[in-house]
Length: 140
Image 1 (tube, rainbow, N blue to C red):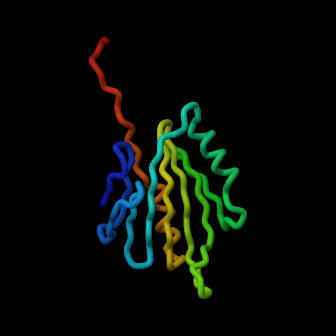
Image 2: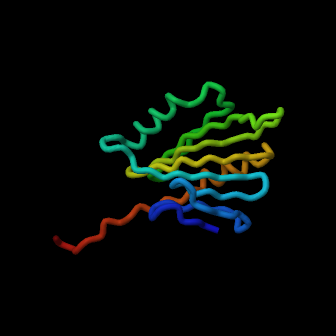
């Protein structure tokens, strides 16, 4: 099912996810998987490529894998890493940034089972972007 994130962004997740809004973030979860999404506008005078270059320069040194995605008018950057949960437990995370000419989604997938990584990557790559149209009177 496609869930509306903003007027421009949708994410397609199975119906069995619960959802809530907390601290301006949209949180989806079910047993073993959490997805946290924050949307923000691009800083004035910054292009989507410049933004992703700035983010890339700050990626964690312990990133396991770095990912790049382009689809139509959106571009993306992501990375995976293990996070310590204490008591010797870890979970895999996929953190992504997907940018249009006007906005960016930061999406984090937290996976108790690392075999869910391919699913998380497919959800990230299938984010839906519908730019707001600037419709006005014809002929001005």
